[in-house]
Amino acid sequence: MALVSTNCTPFSGLRRSCSKLDKTHSQSFVQQVNSQLRLSSSRKPCRAVIAMAGSGKFFVGGNWKCNGAKESITKLVSDLNSAKLEKDVDVVVAPPFVYLDQVKASLTDRIEVSAQNSWIGKGGAFTGEISVEQLKDIGCKWVVLGHSERRHIIGEDDQFIGKKAAYALNEGLGVIACIGELLEERESGKTFDVCFRQLKAFADVVPGWDNIVIAYEPVWAIGTGKVATPQQAQEVHVAVRDWLKKNVSEEVASKTRVIYGGSVNGSNCVELAKQEDIDGFLVGGASLKGPEFATIVNSVTSKKVAA
Image (cartoon, rainbow, N blue to C red):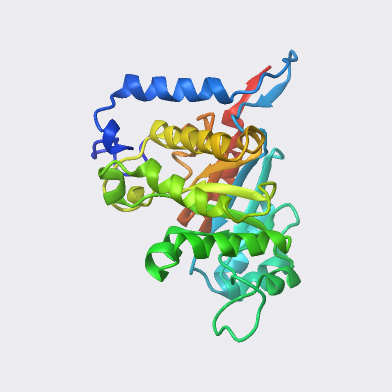
């Protein structure tokens, strides 16, 4: 299902040298990489299992961005507390900084709390920043780093983001590491180049990958009139996992969850979740609606197959 208006035609284009790839070539590329990455597993009759390329648990994060007030957040937390969520999912929400304590104090323990940003080192004379130590002090378990709005509006570069991730990990916070290309980068065939460059900035400095979730966020799919299909998202996720295999290790490629963050909502989440290399979602606007966010979390059921 398309992520935006269905009157728009889907488009591809990942590398300039592959600009003429058709559907057959794209599928064969995916199949080739998949065949190198899949781990064999024994099958047991009459049991539902999660069909995912990665070995980690399905992960859904809600990025509330700069939205909400005390009243609306109280209502949202109430909706989340009463929602019935599938057990086979790690669920995290990232409220605005000023509401972190309110959310942590009132939200069910079933859902963990994340910050939307953190400073590059220990706190001090850094006006307007939030330190990892402060986030841990109020019970945060995760932090979102490298989001496109931080990269392209605030101006954070790859190396700065990588250093922030390394510090957070060293201090015991999990990192939702965002990558993704702009529209002009997609159209000029630079999707893989951009994503791999951003991945390398993390890989060069992080102490390990156990507490990292990669969020692929195609900036071009947000409000541009272009259509991203589940297959296009899957294709990039395959490439990300292959990059990890070649540049970090096969174990990291298998264990690291690669989630999708491009205009996910209650209508398209099931088709996206069916893609083998999509290990969950980073949700924006739809995460501000408790019932819809629960629907997205529960889309994990579309991955369950009889085994």
